[in-house]
Image 1 (cartoon, rainbow, N blue to C red):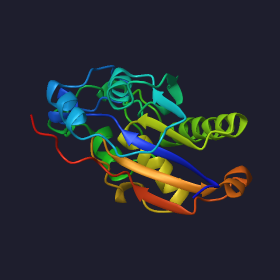
Image 2: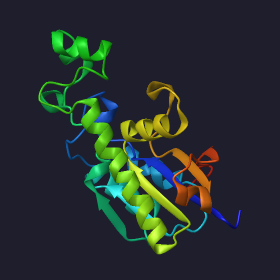
Image 3: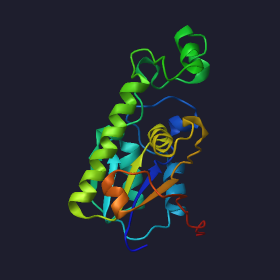
Amino acid sequence: MDDGVAISLLRHGMTEENQRGAYIGWTDVSLSTEGKGILKRNKPCMKTVDQLFSSDLRRCLETAAILFPNLPIQKRTAFREMNFGLWEGRTYEELKQLTSYRQWLDDPFHCHPDGGETFTVFEKRVVAGFALVKDKMMDTNAKESVIVTHGGVIRLLLSTICNRSFFNWKIPYGGGYRLIWTKDDFRRGDKCMSLQEVPITENQRG
């Protein structure tokens, strides 16, 4: 629609640490060879993008560069994943004997990783970063923006915007959702009028 404004939230591609199930909130790792290949074969089908924002961690910056090679990337620390503190780089099997880890699994909104972020701190950081993106879009009259970030960040924003449980959202690597507002609703700070999965191109052979 001509008076529409949209923000797409895309998850970074797969890393080796993701493949082994490790927590890597603030750990700065690159995409795996397989992850890069999947992104190159399955790119999101999107119209012209005016602005591209990204978490400042490598896996997101590499994803943004692969999917949108001709756009400058605006780095934002606000869009980092939750900081898992002393649990960074470790898996469920390595942590399951810790009482603090089991407590966090049972109540992740009130317990927090050892030496890591509370959910409240994580939420405030991400929501504030999203508000700044909206402000910049209004200041520059941008109509279409993309944020390349992490699964937890996308779940948080979607649960906040759409009033749906944090854990009910499934976000594949390299996939995500497109939020659409009318220009007036966007400026007023109203809820988005439409939510769509970002379509992905079919696999390209050869």
